[in-house]
Image (cartoon, rainbow, N blue to C red; front, side, top):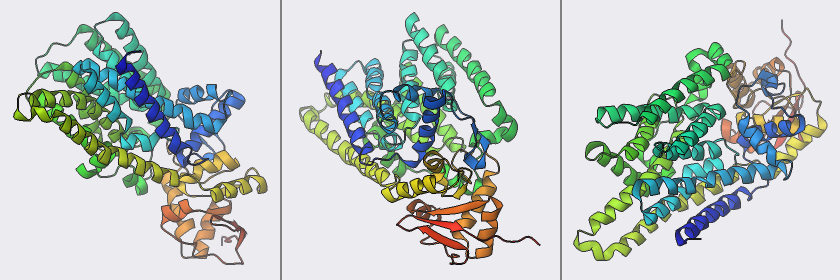
Length: 495
């Protein structure tokens, strides 16, 4: 095994160890992963995912591609389910290191710069925190997107053309955000035309093919959503009251924190240099995807955190080109003899602005996982309530309620095709924040809610310390711990 290969494997193993260390700091998954867990469990037990969901929103149709869930389910016959959702996504996410190394080497032809790129790719704070304990689809989607770009860079070779079409088509089938790749490639072809650079026939034809394939497949898979929501399907039917939580305003400081200072500076410099001063098709390809992300975030068509994941990966690859350019320039100056000091400086800044934030945000993410008392409360509900019971929980606890207790929720974060999510969110807010008993009971009666779960998640989500309308006449405390469960006893009679 060559020296550089050994170093790359070591970086991969260290990254995987870092991720798994934090993933196993808690025996539980983060809240958002319990939807994946439920789907994987259903596939293991019945062979089919849950498209007609009797528990979410008291019963609704779910619309999604189950390919990722089937992939995870393959391993569930060998290992415990929770282990699968912790280990496999982290292996997939860690593979980005190898893919970015290949991309950087293709662009720079420098082993040193490519290894530094791989190391930087290991510590993109937003990518780590969004994937290490959530079983997120982005663990597969991001590496596969950049693998497609690597194949596209080598598309003049027949086998790589085949590889590209297979991986890109697979992306289209697994998630709507594959449109990012298609949009980036369209911008790339347009950029070449504007810069009077000739695109290969394979490039143009494959981009046209993928564009029409993407439109066709997404219209077929998400036809019901398009018919029900129209153009608002782009915003996934998210209630207006919480739209700002998903599509937040961004700034440079946030970008530095979530992406890292070193890749941000070098990456932006390389994009500027090759757009305005030099011409390189490989740089244009990555810059085109970055431009697609910028437009989508600007028009509030893409959640900033998702954009930061992809943008951080792009900038990590472009860092390799900037790194090489910097040291080539350094050789022409009197500072050439201080090359090693600059390398040490880069590493120190990278540790401070990328590695340490990755540690910090990972620890914070671990704290957000359901606590021991939360799980005790959910298990109590599973063992002491009837199967068709409706239970009020916070928005992000909706999936864990369905998965652990197999009981119905009022609302969860799967808004697409959901019945009246805006109204349900307002009603849930009333249950937890109302000052008036009659208003809360009226909403509880509306959904036939028998129990209210009051956890740290509810305290944080609704910014409350207690339910203000409780009394012994209408509400019975039946699970008393840090997480509490109240039984609703009263009804508001209609006149």
